Image (tube, rainbow, N blue to C red; front, side, top):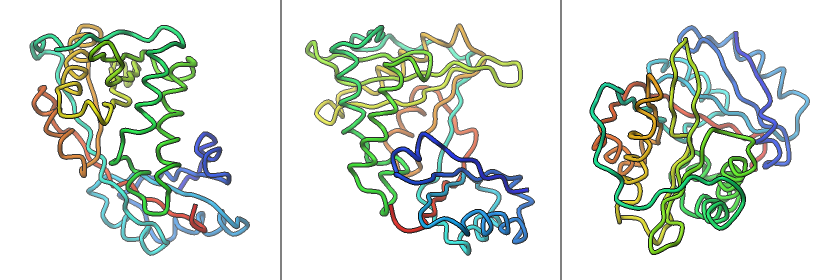
Length: 247
């Protein structure tokens, strides 16, 4: 059965309802779309999104027929905590404890460095809005509203990149997740991303049963980075968007 739940956080950015679709996708049928038709019937504007396992191609076809389009293939990587530690990060990494220069630097980087996120790849979402979503994401770490740790890498004494981490429990296992990682445009290609990834692995491998990170299939440099740090692909999913009137 198709479930439609409002994503109130995203709704605030779009200025109208944003909704996530979830379902047992491999059993998804044309009949399940009735709920979507009924839901959107009274709406003039809305944004819908779904994340569908790549093996559920039939569901993707039906969502395409309903006006959804694929913006991203999400790739999730896992690193076994049984693997050895990595060489120390090559730059200074500090935890953000409160609002200050490090926090402001992380927010500024988040609001300018991305180009492969699902919102940046969506042609119906402006670059300004896509940047604002990422900046607010990290702002919520600074405010203590999201995640379990925000870390900043410094180069020449200035923030050059950030690492946002969520520690959770799934099926009785402790999981450490790179929720978001970004490097300032001016510092890219200098090993900052690798340093932050190594820091994450070495900091959390002794505290968790699993280490996870996700990226986009379009972001080949990130996939190569994670593989070089011992991560392996464990699952993939299509990410689909639908705009009822373009945002």
